[in-house]
Image (tube, rainbow, N blue to C red; front, side, top):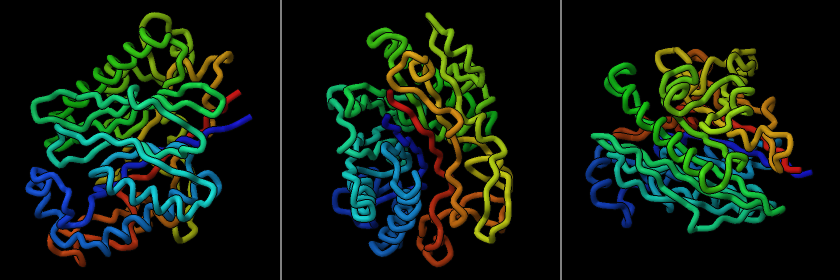
Length: 341
């Protein structure tokens, strides 16, 4: 029976090169300083670095569906998909992308998927606004149909940052959580409560924070989600990879405390949330929860600073100082396997 390898990765500012002719003027203005010196060569190197990790996933077969955030536009994402297709001959990757209109930097959520394994109805693709005073990234919703004709609804998230303080900014992420659970409820009303749904993303909060537990209605208790009848709930798989063991680039055993590191501390920001439709025994697609993991390949791990990922960075006028051509992203990717009967 077929399995579906689902991954998510915050790509850390994957922008098209400086001077990209189709860049929207407001993004060019907002990002002028950060992108100064973001040459075609640096962009190509970034693509190569990301692709080298993505191609290693799923035992060298690459993901079937990859949710991403912090990508500027369809051009940048298409370049990455093209590189993946070159590295994985069996794949036919394509992209689903919407341009964000509210985020101040114009970074988006999107999907790369194997078009040989899935189709999607463009009329069933939605970019949900998370309305707040200063704007934020949208939630991208896509209904993928498998080769067997079963639907999987995927929602890609990138919630507001902790800029200004985790406590002071928490209301913005609560609003994002409410937006996600609102659309979860609407999906139930239209497609029924047993439709398979997977929400993924960089939530900028940890699984125990109120934005996830109360507002997105995501819990570590599988039974609560399976028994949900009238009010939506998500089962949060990130509890599965707390304290995940790994080896760093020096071959030393490490215990991962998060998917994003700041000041030497790990934060579990990158998570998968699944609906009851992926938990029911009668469901055509079921989550294999024990497979949920952080994709911490040794090459990504910075052994000098805790055990966090190695960022690539943006030049900001001085590429030598502000970029690391041997870096990847400031987040680890995550993955999980779904089984289709």
